[in-house]
Length: 105
Image 1 (cartoon, rainbow, N blue to C red):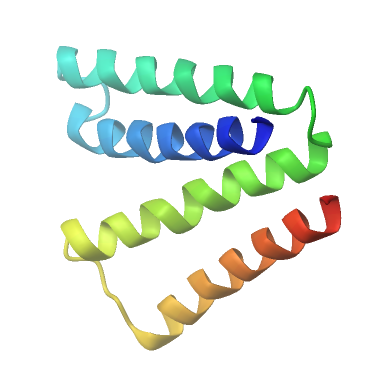
Image 2 (cartoon, rainbow, N blue to C red; image 1 turned 90 degrees about the horizontal axis):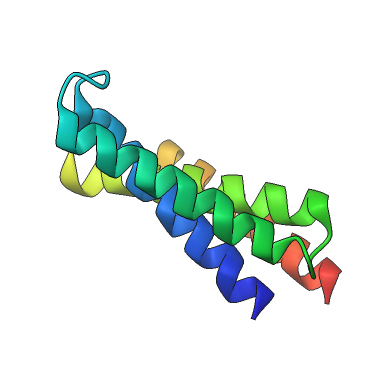
């Protein structure tokens, strides 16, 4: 269950980054509220995950899910460049997360 919590924490991290973009630097109230709620959800799930997953592994995977996820969201929804090099770098992040998961088993 801890790995599911960690995945949910990463997804909520992607959510707060999207909310942060739409909040206009916390100038739009409801997007700002959504951002803070997603931040709290993300940290809450991370706290649940570190009960069973080593702290360093959990943090690295949490940030990796967020980094790779928001980069892909940027490519698919915000017209950010999806160059081969950029996708390869995202692949390296994912490979690192898979390696950490396998090393923690």
